[in-house]
Amino acid sequence: MTKIAVCGIAGRMGQRLAHLVLESEDLELVGATEREDHEVVGRDAGEAIGVPELGLVVTSGLEPVVDMADVAIAFTTPDATLRDAGICAAAGTSMVVGTTGMSDEQLDRFSETVAPITCVFAPNFSTAMNVLFELVERAARVLGEDYDVEVVESHHRFKVDAPSGSALRLAERAAAGHDKKAADVLVHGRHGKPGERTRQEIGMHALRLGDVAGDHAVFFGAPGEFLELRHHATSRDSFALGALRAARFAATTDVGLYDMGDVLGLG
Ligand code: NAD
Image 1: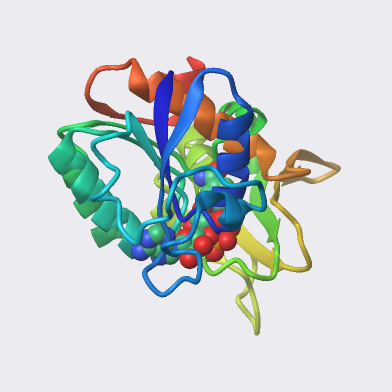
Image 2 (image 1 turned 180 degrees about the horizontal axis):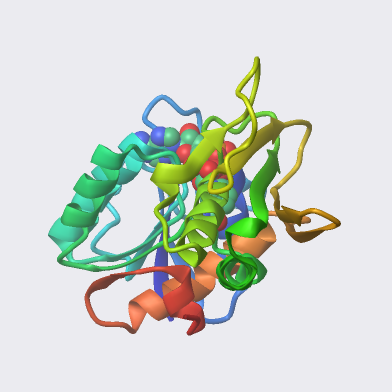
């Protein structure tokens, strides 16, 4: 049995992760955390996810449970994830991290912090989305800069960062197909009179509406045609099941910082 701690158990992803751990035959839920002012702290984890008592108390930090866990899974906030990364690194506990919205400085700090442990960090844990990352880079390379690239993403109204980490990864892969860096060619939205589109720019557009779990489309357009490559997440289980696959990988893989592509053997 691989022992799992779920950080942010009352969150949208935390709840699905915990449910799927409980449903699995090879994973055991040994820890559950929430932010210290959350009403579920100190209560049974079953209450936090709407199932009968589990005999596991939700804690406000990973410290009390980190030694019991083989892998801590964090889909929380950048600050909370950085703190949990430090706790896991000190304890030698592996991590799976899906939190998005870290600044460049936080990303650097995160990579340094998790250096002593096994960690899978990905902006999107869905298997099909990771296939899309590959397809987008290949399409960009084959089509070249004659085809304008635009990324459009949609997410639920509660999402706090924009554009999504997955949309940024799609732009990075499209830019890589043009032997460029996304940071040098990304244009976020357009308004006023931005002038004609440059050939090399990659447009990025974020929609926030309703309860969309995640929708990403990459368009490649040239005179006479456009190609649309699209991923549509119909529920959060695509991410949660991928994260559990990553947890099994992390529990059996040497120290290192990995991506979901490594878990799936892509690239
Ligand atoms: P959410 O707001 O529903 O859940 C986050 C949870 O973390 C909340 O319950 C919050 O109280 C908790 N939290 C905050 N601070 C904490 C702390 N110090 N300790 C413990 N828990 C703490 O958000 P969500 O929709 O579940 O998304 C969470 C993150 O995961 C976001 O960054 C989102 O973009 C990302 N995400 C990534 C993927 C992926 O595949 N990589 C998929 C979906 C969401």
